Image 1 (spheres, rainbow, N blue to C red):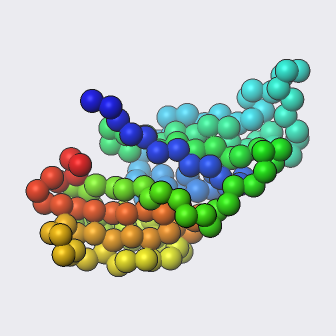
Image 2 (spheres, rainbow, N blue to C red):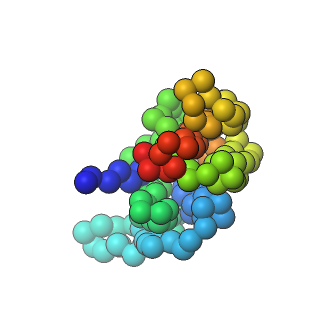
Length: 145
């Protein structure tokens, strides 16, 4: 079966954001590649962008969360745009609370986590990096959505 792995663009703070995500989800980065790692005559990298993230991967269960910093030459990423949300299907209410509270710290809660009318335990927020998340625990699926 196909697997979906979200990828997020940042304006120079991908490493900071992913260090925060790692503090909530746990685990270790599978990959950290900086623009300087790809520098060559064919792909010159400015000193200002050398240490920015070209590719970073954080495994989360059977999936991965990926990101990069958008090079300035490509223009800024609108961090307040209406993005699609990243949905986390938790395996328990306790895990849902941990992820919701951890990831929403310093962000803006759109819907507090609570029992929903459709039968799951659900909440929505925009984290302090502008990324939109939904956390859901449905006892019928137990994280298997």
